[in-house]
Image 1 (spheres, rainbow, N blue to C red):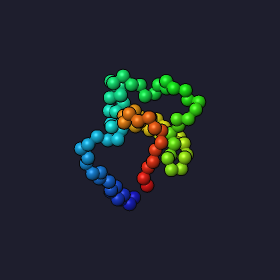
Image 2: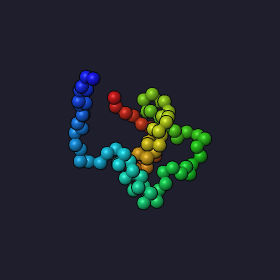
Image 3: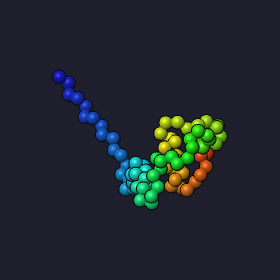
Image 4: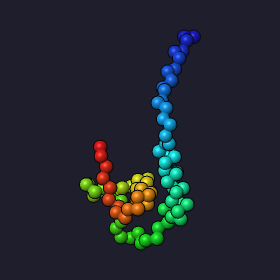
Length: 86
């Protein structure tokens, strides 16, 4: 039986800061401790107010609206318009 080559282990650079997941969880905890529950919807969802790409006008779908709502609450913003860089 031929000997198997040792698998190369990919080394990751060590980063001492918090991960993206830890940042999101910390932000949620801060909002909860401040008395804000970002998943509650005290407004009427039948009209506008959807998260929209400012340049293309397309509505965001999937997990993006949840993350963008969290970002709006963290920054105390009321505008649901977003623009990213590629």
